[in-house]
Image 1: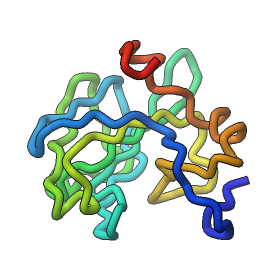
Image 2: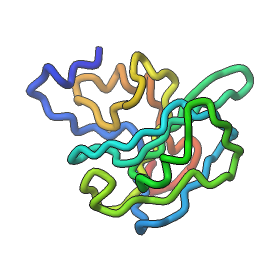
Image 3: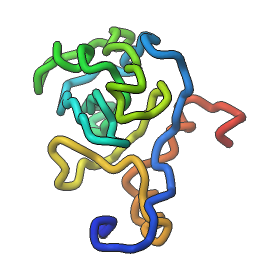
Image 4: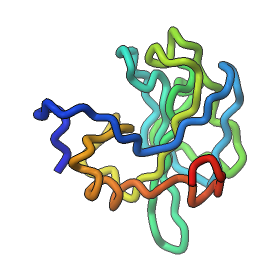
Amino acid sequence: MYNAKNSSEKRNIHLGVDFWLPENTAIHAIFNSEVVCAIYQDSHKGYGGFIILKHTFYETEFYTLYGHLSKKSILKFSVHDKIKKGEQIGVLGNIEENGDWVPHLHFQIMLSLLDFKDDFPGVALESEIPFWKLICPNPNYLFKLEAFQ
C-alpha cells in the first residue's frame, strides 16, 4: 500500500503529533520499552535523531517513534536495549541536526513496523489514509489534549 515514492501526490497527512518545544528539552519514554532502532538521519527534512521503541501491553506489541532528537541522544542506544517508563531517552535537537526543522518532538504510535527497519513514514499520501489509520492510531488517545481533538 505504501506508494509515496512512486506518486506525484504530496505526502501531507501527518501520522503522529508534533510538540513544539525548545532544543535540549528532555524527552522521556512513556512506557517500558525495548529499542528497535536508534538512527541519525542527516537528510534535509528527515528526522535527525530518532528512536523507535517496542512495547508489550497485555501480550499486544506496539511501537512508538520519537523523532527530531539530538544526534548525541541516540548514539547511546543499541537495538534490544531496555528503557524503563519515565527514563530519559534524550533531548530535542537543534535545527542543524534534526532535519532542518524548528525544534520539536514528532511522536507517533505504530501497531506494525511493516517492512521498515531503520525508518518509518511520519507523513502519508492523502489517498492512503484509510491504510495508515489502521497502522498508526491517533497518539491523542494517550494524551487527550483538546488541541488535537
